[in-house]
View (cartoon, rainbow, N blue to C red):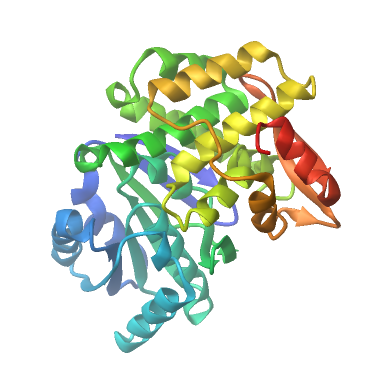
Length: 352
């Protein structure tokens, strides 16, 4: 088992290994005064791993209250969030108890935001079951829900008490979800690790899960510890996300998050090349690795359509949008675009 430790506003460990879901109860019971757990999962994941998670918790002497919601981004809503809070209240959960988020990014965001706000904050454990959640969304303490098409508009920074990544559960991950995780992994290479980018370009990610997850969360640890509340360097983790989130919203979330990130990365690198910030060879390398992992590189919407959502992006401030521009594979910088220039900026990325 590999361990990555994070020292932020709360300190915690990320455990990475095959078959470690059985440790959940032991790790949860080790927190002081915990007696009960709300086990949050969706209707895809719970039938696969809910029973094993609940059994581990119960064997450790903890009462388990399962909350299972319909899968999909549409459930990351005020309605589901409200239902979860009411459920926890009806179970008489206390501030010394725990939430366990068993699932992908939607589950982690929803459960984490509930943890941040129920009784002004209780502990939670992330047990990610998707590759994307293991390498990115379960780590760092960003929690959020969506508002009618606008992604992550309501949320809080609330660090987990533990992240437990059991790579064995990836055996049941649908191929499309696997590819979504690969998009976030490629993002880390483009951001700041040329050697890592080359590794995942040559060796299938499926053949090096533990090494890949450890590399990504170690890179994220460095960023989170330096800029926990997203005021500087942490913004770089949004590479491809500003454009990607708009595409997600326009599709009614039929475009998955990882697919949208891939589209966004390709678009923003085209823009960087057009502006002379990035060498064209880097764009070709990115497009090749996206193709290798079956990820899209084209935005299926017009600039006018994209603008409607990008202007409501939470990174918009004082009439400008913060954007992340690649300079090379392994190097990116933070820039900004005035709202009135966004349409022309998107055109540089082939979005007309």
